[in-house]
Amino acid sequence: MTAAPIVIVGDTLLDRDVDGAVTRVCPDAAAPVLDERYVDDRPGGAGLAAVLAVGQGHPVALVSAFASDAAGARLAALLSAAGIDLHPLPLGGATAEKIRLRTRGQVLLRLDRGGLGAIGGALSPATEELLASAAAVVVSDYGRGVARLPALRAALAATAAPVVWDPHPRGPAAVAGARLVTPNETEVRQLTGQPVADSRVATATAGADQLRRRWRAGAVAVTMGGDGALLCHTGSVPLMVPAPASADGDTCGAGDRFATAAALALAGGALVSEAVQTAVERACRYVLDGGAAGVRRLLADDHDRSVGPVRSGLADSAHPTAEFDAAVTGQRIGHQAAGEFAARVRASGGTVVASGGCFDLLHAGHVTALQAARQLGDCLIVCVNSDVSVARLKGPGRPVVTQRDRARLLAALGCVDAVVIFDEDTPHAVLSWLRPDIWVKGGDYAGDGAGQPDLPEAGLLRRWGGQTAIVPYLDGRSTTNLIAMARARGVPDGHVELRKEPA
Image 1 (cartoon, helix red, strand yellow):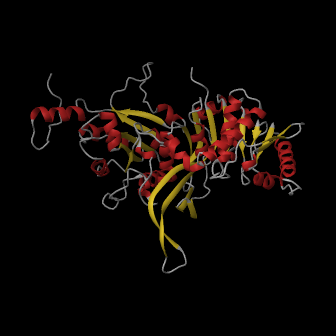
Image 2: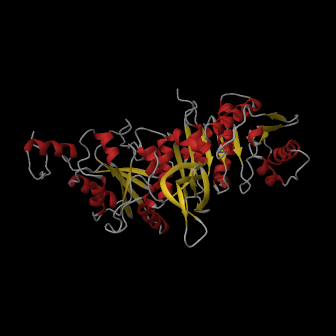
């Protein structure tokens, strides 16, 4: 029997570390010049909390908002590769990015991109069911709007699962009945306006008690960095939980590690005091292991190069399947192009249709299916497996045509409005980011066993109210068969007539 999921709710950011060397000073300003060596992307905010919860005995799901831009696509790919089940909400505007320029382990400058945007307010039935059936819920609030959604707050108040609320000073109050609230010292003072007392413990105790009563929470645990945490219960003497070891280092994400560890312990039946002790130990270990810099090990996957270091600049080409030849293709290839096109269609009330596949040796069967798909809406975005993805799915010798050429051929079709390339084995990550209204495949699918055809992506589409469709596929057209026929016939120029072999 599959364990109930740990659900992370909140604002997801893209954290990007740009590492390089400083060997000179800018000639026109008193500033160091950073020569970029490599770029390392990782999920931040609620996305980091979700990554930290993976592999702890429960499946992990993330309810968060994603924008239709390259950074949003990158986040969806990273999170899906980590094994996280995405329940996306539409985010207007740009994905929030925190870009750190670093050298020799030191941060020279942080550049923030993106801002607050409108977030879709309705929850799909699948998301409502997810929250109702959760083993525990962590609200990782970064003050960007997800935790304010009325429908989401109603679902959180109704769940029987223990709720751990990691608040933000710009965010809303926790829903009444939260099992545990986990601010740090600065946050609890900002949230309560509590003046600084004679000691840290006294200040934290007064603030925690005030916050607990105001928010009608079961308990408040104030994290105190290397000194551990202070737990304030109803009508009890505060419990001080010291850190098991001195942990100097990068504390970015330690609060997320604390909240997820506490939620996992509560899901296992621990008392709140036991959960806080476990959370202090896990947060301490997280810092000792390198903090956010160690997260990349959690994201490592030999079968998906999209989670490795990105050796590129900071523009849209930071995605491993670099956006190429945009000028040649009329700005129709790439995550940025696809996201912007979908956004324009939605803004005018149109229907976004998507389809996908390998499209190795583009043939009449492909074209027929894509033409039929385009007729179902106001734009068609094609999601194409990258070269590494095709090689994993199809085996040695594939693809015959590189992703660069496959994308250009597809973008040249009159029925295709944009093309986006993905590295994963399935299109789930790119679909979670793109959120098409209709997902179309060509061919014959067995369906769900009840006589109704269905697609593997149908459950994913239902999360945002989308639907799936199957369009006719010309009989006898198959890339695999074409390759075999070409080899059997020894056709010198690779030309193969597109018709079925006689029986």
